[in-house]
Image (tube, rainbow, N blue to C red; front, side, top):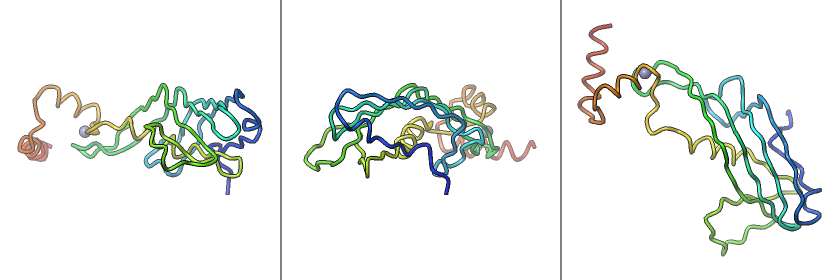
Length: 161
Ligand SMILES: [Zn+2]
């Protein structure tokens, strides 16, 4: 199995606090991310150590293209995803009492896996309704959050095709 670029050895960073590492990834595939275009994921990850057991990980300028069916016309369309900044903590041990809002992951055998973090960052950008360019235009013309109007759109579309 190909080693994922999203698994990063952090043994050097955990020597002491205040250390920093920056990794750029390009056209990296991510199997768990459904509908990711073949161009993959691009972005930069900046890892900083607080001390010898916790790290702060920042994703910067994460970009990718998702190819998925439109909610309305079911045609496949491309959606550009851009995440300027996304942050999470990684720790050797996660204290269950520590209920901070920060997203925290485990450092395992001096390695971190930022795959889950990337997935969360991309999923956060998911629009409420996934519409292709045509349907986005249509939905701007008419006020149609209503279920019935959604139905009538469908009928209309079928009849005149
Ligand atoms: Zn559409």
